[in-house]
Image 1 (cartoon, rainbow, N blue to C red):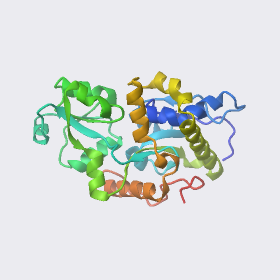
Image 2 (image 1 turned 180 degrees about the vertical axis):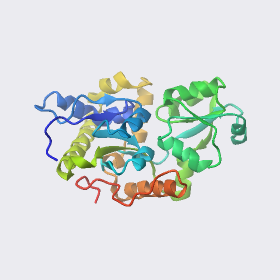
Image 3 (image 1 turned 90 degrees about the vertical axis):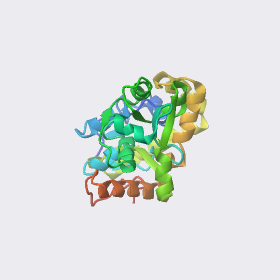
Length: 286
């Protein structure tokens, strides 16, 4: 499909996404016409839900959600969040244990988040879950509204300040079992845009990230404007953990991790079967 109008774009306000996209967003003011409309910055579960209605042409998605939408979207090679030591954490109040979860609910950051599917893989028989926006989960656990919570993003660096403990690092559980990085989130694009335009979008995202890596201070104000946690050390830790070489290009190991994650979800009955390509042709996917 030939581009006739700017594309719709959405990503999260978390530092890893704003770091990746900051240069691209700044360039839009210089383009006539721009490649994208002014982007939507929304919680990842909001973006997940929007994708079921095909609201956006290019969007950040949890890999869990992307696996439900492969008939409409493919996964770009650039912009993903994968890695080791960066998975969601299952937390509770001080003195809590996995056994205590049987006496209460566990908060998850949305039905279609990767965190929710990882929790289901880890405790397949546990069903008493309640959805919350990710930034509300730690407070709910600390207040006793839920017995535990699956936390993501910046919460990984701050949960201890509320007196919470980690019952299980779900990413570490995944790594120990499969010896692969944990696939958390990706940038997905509508398949009907065509290989040429998909390739252009992938390259623009990749170049934006390369620029940010070479000019980190150039993104600082944009990142802090949208971050939940504005402490510089937390932001730097967040970016350092979730933005890596897999974000530039999934590569063979990254694609293997995504394929394994989706296959296991399908085996558990949590994901639909899909016989086509996961990754975008024209964007390093074949």
